[in-house]
Image 1 (cartoon, rainbow, N blue to C red):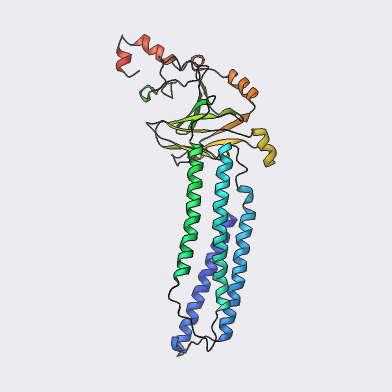
Image 2 (image 1 turned 90 degrees about the horizontal axis):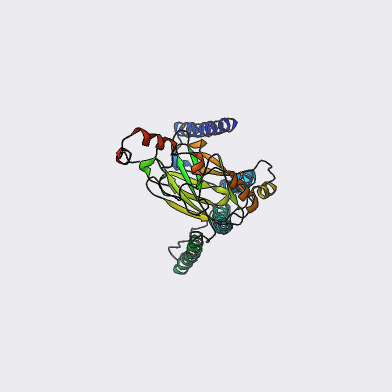
Length: 347
């Protein structure tokens, strides 16, 4: 709230200064002055340059202060193998942008003091310089080509095929929560059909698919083993959601009517990240990064990364689809409806 008040106060001060300057101009005109009477002296030009330099120092001071002040809100180190490469690429881009920005703005502040008005000095007519134009075209082009090639190489490595021993799991999005589904002992996720969504079967799983029965459904939080590939499938029930796991530098849209995929290898456990960040309550998190409705802000799920042994112990404690009896209402429908009616109903 205090930041808003500061902002309003600054706007009001700027407005007052503008109005006062306009009043001053009107008074000057009423006294018989005009634009033809205004003559810029050397002292005024020099002071204008000095003030601009002081403004530039304040500008760069605020620029550095913002980086320092907002540093606690930056993401910590990447917690996935591909995330390390993404951070390198991003850091390189930021370094290039900052270097060009600082040089350009510094020159902008320097020129008013270097070239302030002096009597007898004439402006140099400098219409073009083909050599400078070529250099200033080639250098950005080479830098851009380098970034594009690096980016494509990183992209291809991220979307490569997952390892053979990758854990297969699905993240299912719906307003406004997530469900994680793990492949069972057969290592395959069971089939689904959106027509089957209803009752306890929120994911539309097929009851007659043998691969479905040993799948594991969890909500609230899901676990991943460190240093092992995870092959994610993403689905959505009704609108476009976006599965965003910022600490792993992973994001994928969840689109109704289709399945999208992403895989990565987590390389830091939750406990390791708590030590790195100095936050004993740190947790990895899955967020929705699309504005999907009124409760979008609350659509999240905790992620626990742990050793393979701890993961195996956790997954062994979870109930399978068969044990959760999500098809119990389907069995009651079978008893209630005549033969063939269930099939006609799309179940």
